[in-house]
Length: 432
Image 1 (tube, rainbow, N blue to C red):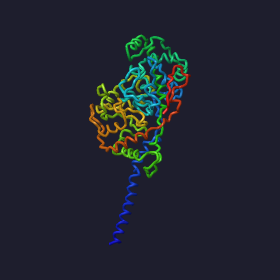
Image 2: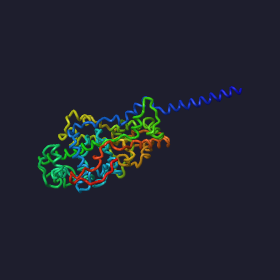
Image 3: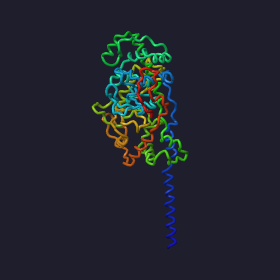
Image 4: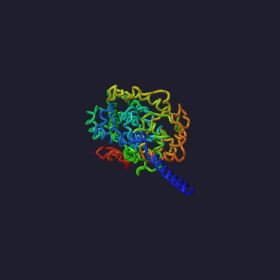
């Protein structure tokens, strides 16, 4: 009897020990499929910035230098107080930390990051622009942003010796630019419209061409803004074929959050690829922006992109018709009502608040939103309730902090250029 008891105790102990190691192995190793998915999320797999057929100067270093100076130049605004860097601040990963953007006035949308945006085929929350250069032009003439005009921008290029010299080396001889009126544009207030009516057709064409080239230079600069590898990437890069989960790069809570990210929470359905975004549009039941009607989102955005005089198919684009298939075949069905663009999760812990109107203050509330998946005011919420426990919600939140890293961009591009460019904003920034 005593021998059998001893044997039972020993076998029991061995069973516990064996079970511990088996469980440990099961918990600590990623499966082959999980490992393949994780590897696809690493920045090591991020290809070079794709070419932009609509902008033949997209990879021109001279164009990037001109765009860099213009990006920080407050003279691109009507009142001389707003530059691109006013809303897309380098020290905030090219966001502004505000619910709604503030230029010369308060805007209708939250400022998204510009980091890595050159990989996207669509721009703005609703995708109403189909190139980075056409997007760069819109804020200049928007009344709540720069509130300027295309003639004023052309006059700036013509009157600044450094800008003029740079411009002509890239785009050729500058055409004659009228010195008056002060503002003229087919968009904007009465002054802009009146000034535009007073220009000849040849002057309108010349001014618009210079304005377009300014957008292409700004895009060439913004293509330099690339995310850097974070603890998240270091963790994935070190995973071997056995997929061992333990690592010095991620905490146990962050690893548990990663399990949820690619598993039960299915964040990876939309936040996939090295930039943690599919560049698509989704309705996830986010509350309407305070004081505004529910946004139609991508449903309106795709229609605006097709009507845009600066789109890929326009005469101002450098692309051939076959290069514009994204625009030609863009989906425009009713299920895109209320859909907003999926933002990158790179550096997301540093770019609060969140959503297209800054409706959600912090990451914990963002995860709670997706856990509940509330009814959408427009169309339907694509997200479904996750039924996560409180501990799982905090684990998923903790993972988001592992996406933060300094940019893989030369520091010189993250601050205003030197005084070689007269009129450049003397803004002091601390590069991330």
